[in-house]
Length: 251
Image (cartoon, rainbow, N blue to C red; front, side, top):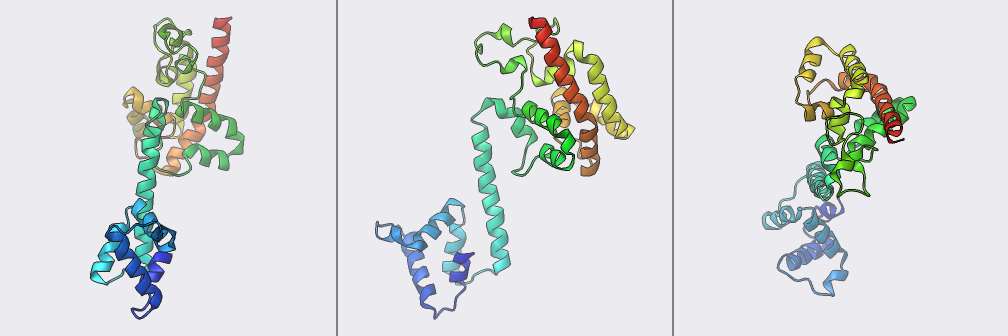
């Protein structure tokens, strides 16, 4: 906004004449060591970082500067797009965050943070859900000291020779079937038959995204939050049950 304030000064203003001169100098490659000490240079570098420099060059060419509120909207939208692209590319450097990036699609407090804030007694449950989303759980697929040993990643609760992924834990592990049905019942209680049938018709990966906080059915946000609040304690109990059975099987 400071840069906009300078460009919006009267044409007779010395400050405006200086910044226009500096901007043209920067535009044509005048980036000497002396010029780098100028605060205008820092402002223009920041504009270039956030892809706003071409807009400034258009101002210089036309001599017409947009209004304060219009510029504010442009800055907010452009910075959000750049920061999101940087955040998304950073997450893609880590394979264990693949589920996280498919569920969290905007840089804002996730639904679990919102639920924990409004329902403090669900804090432990929300922490567990975030661990599942970010692959920081106790499932065997997350065993670090034996990454080269595929058999150590298999689920030891059932005899299907399946890798114990989040999807296997939530949808397919046979010893957890009864608790899984309780989770599905909680979803049915808070929704209509049409919504529940749509949920059950989802493919496996879409189902776990829904349970872990992605509104893949595009439901009303209040309805979706109520469903999560209702079923999260049962998912937490299911996770604790899995850990207990895992300890007994290992022992």
